[in-house]
Length: 267
View (cartoon, rainbow, N blue to C red):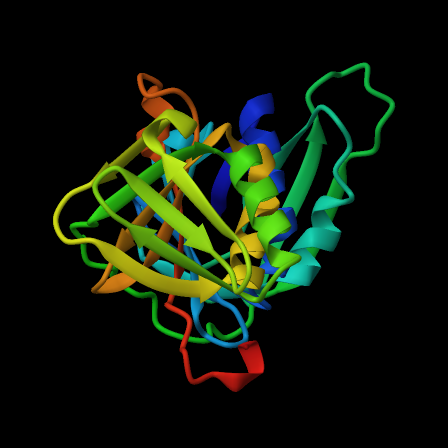
């Protein structure tokens, strides 16, 4: 049974960037596929960082799940090793013999009949998913910062030199971010966009985990950082331009729970 096939070069780059880096976020990828979409979720070892990815069936060049929902887990490190077998210009095809099959098959096939590359066929075992996929309810975020991903990554890396915790204090005209000994004011003129709707925000998070979120910066040019007093911080990767129909076909979200002030290990 064909699960999906990707032939488009740009989409292959996005796919390999995502899946090659999943080992940075979680040991096990929990995957659910139905006739409309593929959802991938996973949590870090401390269970405070959740990645939530959703691929609409239209994002793939071919999508073959049209019956029962298929739920399975894959080892992130193993998938990274498998993807390293793919040569440039080879398409990606992922298959499963049946819903009850214990294995997932990866095929890397030449798109040029004159290519001297070898077609490659790899197999890895499914593993029991670690938790039920979470249905994340919509949140009305108080504050949204839209910023270039490279600037955001550089900022997180610089601040991490001076502490392990980052605090966001958002008011109407700016958001101040700080560690123990550094304070930086982010105003609307400094970023692509800054908004605050409702009450001011005062929240703290792990800098190390925000750095980890930035490791897939090659995916796009900008991210949105969304804050609310009643929900984890959301870092949303915006793939493609606003008028690009594929933006709605691929959602990449990272949810990070607030830093616990009494967690002495992170102080």
